[in-house]
Image 1 (tube, rainbow, N blue to C red):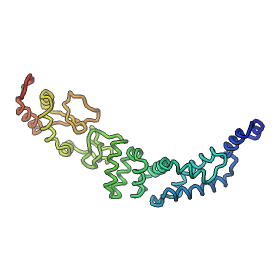
Image 2: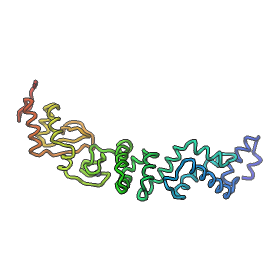
Image 3: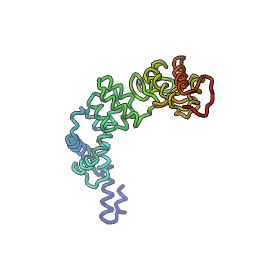
Length: 270
Ligand SMILES: [Zn+2]
């Protein structure tokens, strides 16, 4: 880049070029290293990160590229100017750090898990499966509860809550994307109190739909609601086969509304 010197015009041009060259060659590797160390010491203590118990490598992985990036854009990078820039955007930095810790969920302890949930909630919601494992291992039901909410906000919630782990993560084949359980239909029905739901639904839904479900012996469970087969529903809705007792609930409620078995249409009802 020696030749470019002659092309410099005016002070600002010179300064800009000197700044840009700073990263590549203007600052020695040693100077950059000692700059990093000074910034790391200040940022670490200002952010009070002791409780997270970070390994030096984990902190460095995140901070060093940021320090280098800022240094390369300053004409005279100093510990103070770089630290100030980082601390002015502390939330971004903490989020980057939390996201880094997320890469090794098997190494999480309570403090780290809390740190991730607090500083990178969206990433935590997406990684709920691994983090739930950690919360369970650590006996932190309170953090598991926080993860359930983040999963619903940022993850891929399904139409039904798992009776084992409590996440909205039961798929139509009745397996759970969070805890990996496969549950049978009976357990699922009990967990949502299907008898009560059917009774309430049959009392208020259009009787044609209730009749349709009773005849087909099928309803869908869709995020807290019962749907007849012909009703619109989300693809994640769970198909449930109705047993004799469950159909009897529908028939009984229809009967109370003046709809007898086999009756297909009635223009007025009580
Ligand atoms: Zn589950």
